[in-house]
Image (cartoon, each protein chain N blue to C red):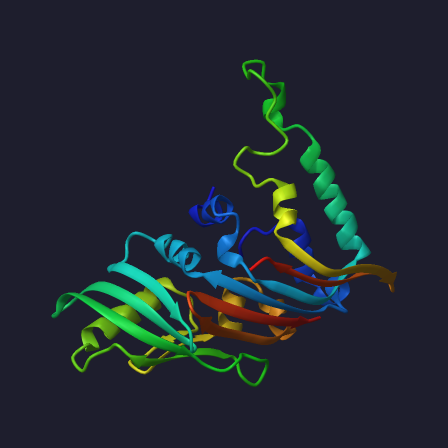
Length: 173
Length: 99
C-alpha cells in the first residue's frame, strides 16, 4: 500500500462516511505530449526501446513500439488499438483495447516478450494477446491499495480523439 | 519534481485542456477539519527555518510552482454552490479547463 496523504487515507478507510452523497463525472482530456511524457517516465530496465502513443479521431490509438525481441531482433511496430466499452461494476470489470492492426504473423516472439514483461513487472490484471490488451480494473485498484474505491466507480471509459485520449470517470459514493 | 508534473506546469496545463468536472461532491466535516489542520501545519516553518547558515527563509511556494491566479484564469466555472447537511458539506460543481 502506498503512503497516502492523510485525507485520502481517511476516505479509503470509510468512503461512505466521508464522501457518501457524492455523484460526480470527470472527463479528463490527456494530450499526446502529456501521454508520451508519462510513457517516457517508465523504468529504464525494460527491453522496450521506444514507446509512443498517437491518439487519432474515430476512437483509434496508434502505439509505436520498438523492442529488442528474441529470435527476430530489434523491431519496430505500429499497433493500432481501439478502446472498448465502458467499465462498470460489477458486470463489466475489463477495460479492453482491441488490436485492430500491427502485429504480423511471425510476431509471436514480441508478444511473448511483452507478456513476460507484464508478468514480471506489473500486478495481476493485465492481459495481452495478439487480438487485445485488457486491464482488470478492480484487480489493479486492489493491488494498488484502492480496493474500497472499486464499488464507487459507476463508469470508466477511455476514448480517443485527434491528439488526445479522454477518460470518463463517473463516481457515486 | 516528477517530469510529468513539471511538463504540466511548464505547459500551463495545455495537455489537459477541455477537461470537465460536473456533479456533487460530498465531504464529511471530519475530512474538512483534517484538511484545515493539514493546511495550518503546512504554513508552519520547516526545520530549515531555524538554520543560521541559510541566507533567507524559504519562500511560501517553490518558484517553479504555478501561480494560483494564472491557474484560476484557466478555469471556466459555470457553477459552484455550497450547502451543508447530515454532517457533510456538499459542493455542486460544473467546471472545465479552457479548451
